[in-house]
Length: 119
Ligand SMILES: [Zn+2]
Image 1 (spheres, rainbow, N blue to C red):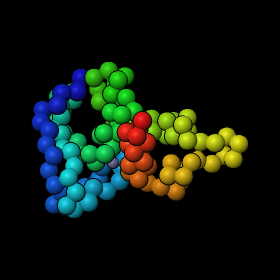
Image 2 (cartoon, rainbow, N blue to C red):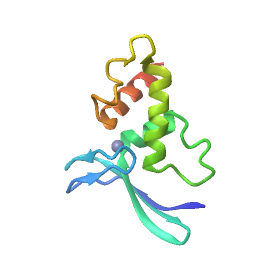
Image 3 (cartoon, helix red, strand yellow):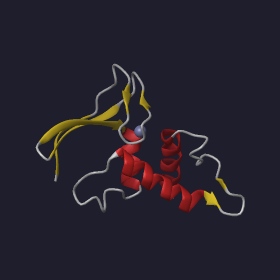
């Protein structure tokens, strides 16, 4: 069982790697830092605010059995969603702005949020 011990939203003073999308959290960018406990191990989880938001919007936490979502799950789930919603079987291409071969996952996440919030 995952227990969240602390959560903060600091501004990055050095670069960090987002543990969801694997992208860079840039200096000066606000991000999320959680201190979690899992199997008696305490560790920090850092991520983009947008990746956390997208995980929520895509209901990734609904079936996590209280264990949270790791980067591997995040990318897998995102890939499935993109394939489902933005892949065109006839042309075998992704829609503009949703192609994981052309864009970073973080860039795609920004477009996913834009799309889901527009609804
Ligand atoms: Zn990210």
